[in-house]
Image (cartoon, rainbow, N blue to C red; front, side, top):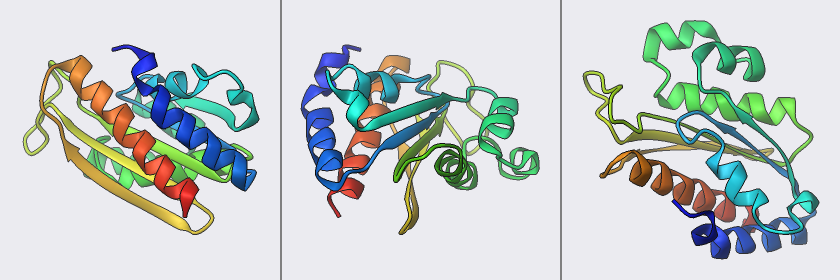
Length: 162
């Protein structure tokens, strides 16, 4: 997956954030920091990108983002509830106006009943609220992660433009 392929949406995101005077953060699990890497590949991203949290384990999600450990037992890490908790935690942990969270099963293993490989939950948050979306993405690990990054960027752009 080439980060340059995200240049156009990241440029649009950067322009939208700069116009509003906003900064953003990421909270990533299955993408392992790829959303943050795509954002910071653009020169001048320090104007609008604050920080990224790579919380690959449940313990990291709890420690860094304050996700209630009971959620993992109740609904699993790949869930709307956890994605929402991740984005809310990121908004609290960073001096930003916009956050995105990604949690999913990129494969090739990790599937559980009801959550096949390619299941990804994303959440976005601002002061106006939090919204989430579930994707069922086809392809191998790289394809799932790349499509997740693109979906995260599209949601960030939508939030920064409203």
